[in-house]
Length: 290
Image 1 (tube, helix red, strand yellow):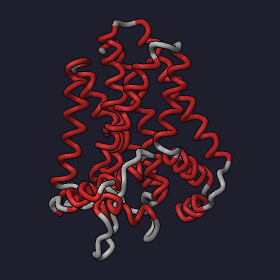
Image 2 (cartoon, rainbow, N blue to C red):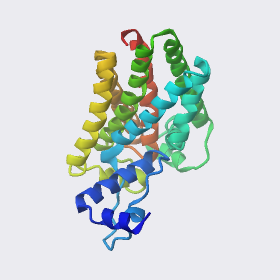
Image 3 (cartoon, rainbow, N blue to C red):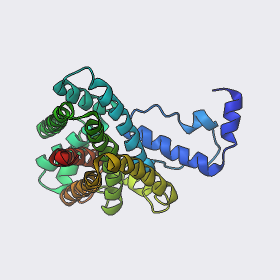
């Protein structure tokens, strides 16, 4: 980066720099998107270290991931059959998220299904090794995503270009942002299962102050882009999918919290994976409306 560019960025208002830090943290937490960290952009700052997880920008990162997959889907639709397209999209989503959500879900299900008490479940989840329940959960989620996307991909090849675009818009520009907004709400609503660790640290950052203007702006950008395009192309079905994806995230969070006594860092990945499957199932059920 040139010195002039660094000086220009350093002169940005402090509020803008703080918001970029939140955005970059969300990008690193949810994906492998190459967002440069604030040190590279603004240089080292002599301030008291502050925990930043970027929760207010989760839906915006979901929108960016959705845009990438939306473009990938529209391009590969021209060259590969429906089944291959579904497999490409599933693999692309795993790659873009670094497999972190899937890993958290597998650890969660090892504890949720293998433990006999909340304490025992949490102890199992601490083990870095993946057990049989985790493997089964991972296989089931990937299989369901592939089957649901394959069903939708078949529909893509049987419809007009406008209808295909509408379907892809609902799948990616609505499902992914809504699910990630839903997980933020779940973190806010349900307690942490531990007093230390990623889950407890993350919950400390999900405050009304951080979810205020920045969170509202991020949410509105994702909502407006997803719903504006989705409603124009898909009508009421787009809104139903957004609401359904959010509800699915909250239901998944509530179920996990009841079993563990709260949520952990692994739980967040499980909530995202479960609610994505539920949202895709809803899209399949509503595809005749699209």
